[in-house]
Image (cartoon, rainbow, N blue to C red; front, side, top):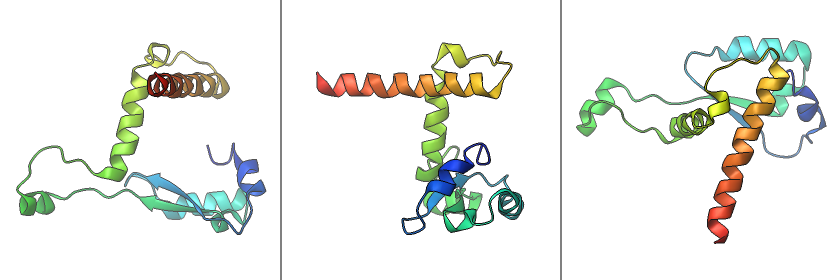
Length: 122
């Protein structure tokens, strides 16, 4: 995804804040960084990766919690995924190209934003 949108990062000025990309603990930041630097060597001056925190069993026990515990940074991703699942067009992935799949995903989020705007203006 980042290499597909590399022109955005190339055109981004160096003097504004870094774009933070939130990752799950399954990603290897070192590998991502080296692969991206092969495509665009200055990219790490414009982005930074952040591993989203995960609540350990010990932290849950200290707080007297069990089961699912909301972590604010992870919640953003989980809610986004839940909103996408509401779009019937995205329930099954029958797209042959990444461009078509991306277009449908963009339409889903546009629909979501329009519904929110319409709700607030009433």
